[in-house]
Image 1 (tube, rainbow, N blue to C red):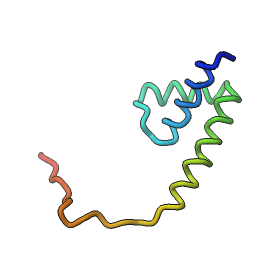
Image 2: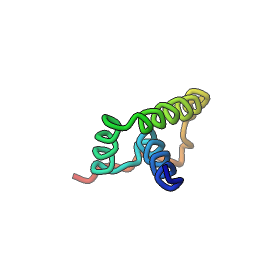
Image 3: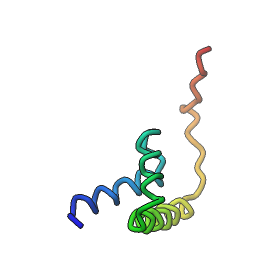
Length: 73
């Protein structure tokens, strides 16, 4: 496999776990997962790696100066 193809799969898996893919990209990656064992392994890696980071974080309250923006209706 070419390095750039491997790097692209790594990036897509990480972005999928982070939730930063748009709907079309997410759908395409989910289809790829059904047929590509390497993509599934990459996904498992990032779920483990990023999940461990999330578990290590302590909850934090935002500063009082940060307030929710009302939604315009």
